[in-house]
Amino acid sequence: MSDVLGLPNSPYVEAYYKGKLIVFSLFVNIEKLNVELQKYGCRTIQKDERGWYFDTSLPQEVRDAMTEHSFYYALTSNDSDGMVYFYKSGYTTKAKSIKYLKPFTQENVEIKIGGKIYSYFMTNDDKALSDKLWEYNCLPPSQKDWKVNYALHKNVLDKMSELGAMYSITFSYGTDVLNLYDGQTPYIIYLKSLSKIQPTKVLGGYLTRLIREDDDIAFEKFFISHPNLYNALDISWTPLMFASVCNSKKVIKKLIAVGVDVNETDKDGTTALMIAAVKSSKETVQILLDAGADKNIKAKNGWAAIVFALVNNRYDIAELLSDGNTVTSPLDEKLSFHDRLGVYVARFISTGEHKTSEIYKNLGNEYMTRKAFSKLQSHTTHPTKRNVILLSIGLKLSLEDAENLLLSAGYAFSKNDEQDKIIKEFLKNKNHDIFKIDSELYQKTGKSLMNQKREK
Image (cartoon, rainbow, N blue to C red; front, side, top):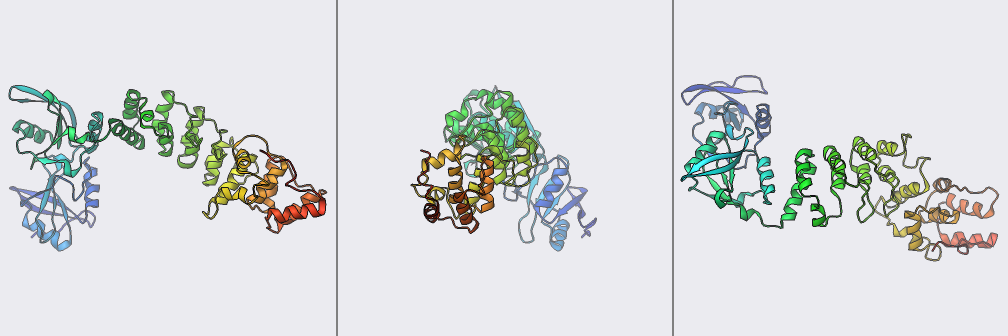
């Protein structure tokens, strides 16, 4: 038996194989094997994937070396005749030909069968196969879809073996079939069996995958030919929104180029910019802004894009949305009233212990109704000083936060106003009981927050 040679990270053993002295590179696991395969332009492989077959050609001295040093994979070479072996002591050796791991795709491969010329699409790339199937509204196959097909014509088998193609598809003469051949057993699928769901859903899934992969070239080709696909699927998010959550810059640029509305909203009033402020990079946000995305639009919860950024600690994005002003805190003094309110509301519910509805419930319907709260939260209408104070009590803000909320709305507690002094004292003591506050106001000043005009 030959010794295991080479460095610890690249061990190998030499042995006679099919009449020649061959170098076998050895690997302890499939991850290390895949790293080596990728160096030579091969795709990665899985231990349980289709294409492995039982093989007895692995030399005994290589098996002995693998057993002694706990290696499970051996690679003969990186050329088209190379082989990958899986061997574990006490188990039958399995093998796979390297030529089926090299990237290969070819359209219109012509094969003569029985006097007719059949045109085939051939590939050994799973992604290329999926892309072709999507074009015909077909789902990618699963392991259970394949059926053994010993009747596959020899000319097809020979051509697939020659090109190193694992898959072939033909629609010639009404023969819509998908073949699998890896040098061992041939398999077949009739494509109609892969069209098991509505075509629009299949196409939608394909378009979504292209967005995730940021494949702008395939996306542009497909999107232009199916411009109303997302409407047909009744999906609330637009392709631009989905591209924003995936940070797919290339696809976003393509969508902008074909004229999509960058300010379109979903049912919650959310825009692509708001989504990007949470999920995307600063570069993506800038792309949307340059395309005319309006940073002042507010969602139904009253949040502008900058609030979405701030409540998610995306200060770099917040700085971009605040015209370059440095934003180091979600309570930065430059925030507008509605943006600051959004941050306070987000903070109130962030722990999961409180719901938004508790804010106005803390005040009772006599002081602020749900409708009034919703208007204050989402409208651009300027709030009264009274309503800012009520919001401070309902949100259980500290005195400092309440003062900041008042300042953002253009108000302040007056040093000489008895009513303001009483409210400040309650907030300072972290007492937010609206009925106790109002009772003391009435006893000492004859005034009441309840008696002042409320927003309807």
